[in-house]
Image (cartoon, rainbow, N blue to C red; front, side, top):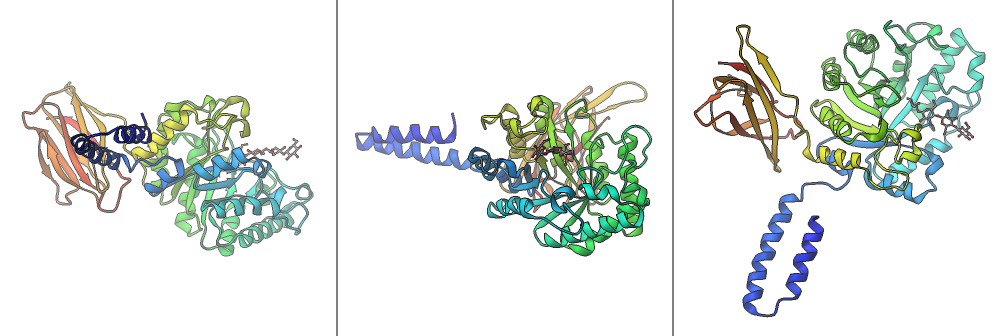
Length: 450
Ligand code: G3I
């Protein structure tokens, strides 16, 4: 039963009251009810609101083709706090003839987003695909200059309105080569990506500048490593880059990989924000959708998630039903899974940590997320494999553990690393962590045989 239904039931009980004694009893019931509702008041009821409570965004791609459909705009305006124009800011849409710009369609999306307090991801300034016909007649310096003029003009037009630009999209080849994708832009010289990023920064210094691609979800893949090397190179040479976008189309033969969280984390470690930019999953597997949220929340520099469309019928792959709403606009199981994961705020459980001793014996520490309060959260760790365990728990500052139970605890000098040993209370222990201004980080734990 929902909180609203419970409240309605309690109210009808109040109206049936007849005697002062009963009224007194019912007053007590109401106090209890209000207290219970207050305890659940933190759980947001829309995707964007929940993400915002945790300092992230949850967005969608929008298309002008559907802006006249009130079912579509109702869902979009209610659920999401970020928008990416699906096609309207691409080169063919914004510069149909050379140096003649057309922003009408893109402006419709921008206006919708602005009027609904949604942030806008610009997509995409330089891309080998969806180029206007006139571009095919250019090469070399003429094409390079046309591309730079396009980047400058579009980024300038939207200066101050875009929180992140996909400056360059899909510039690396698929497969094991790790090479650049062959394209007319690539043939203007290997420095075309760098040139595009510099032009975008000069045109709009307030927008985050992203490199965006698909099939960069496995850290070990050659394509992922090629993008990582591009970021390392840009960082080393001072070329402006602020983020990497993982499109994450887990559909059509490209699956959600087990190491996805590691990939997000490793990209973040290069000094860039990480954004999941075009998420869709074949048949919208609810568990996978929830886990993507957990993975993003586990990485503090993962700013947000964008799904690539509102309803299944709006999807570029509508036959695969990969989104959170069905064609009738109904919430699917994947929607509930995503909302629950967003509300858990990173409380989605990370994989257990297992250590095997060289001489035999093993220790597994499984983190179980507990209750989240306004200023703190609880965590339980279940240990298996040994009764003589030593579990090391690492907390992200400024968070701080305030209380522990069922362990004997010692601390390192920073106060952020706790070493826990059994205190005779069994193999399950817990602790409370104060947010101290960071409500997204969650503990990590490793285990060894003592
Ligand atoms: O609007 C015209 C319509 O007038 C015409 O009758 C019809 C005939 O084919 O085409 C319509 O345009 C189509 C457009 O989507 C709008 O529906 C284009 O043909 C079609 O090519 C275009 O596909 C888009 C695709 O990018 C093009 O590469 C998809 O909507 C869009 O979802 C997709 O998005 C890309 C991202 O930008 C980058 N990452 C991959 C992602 C999926 O391919």
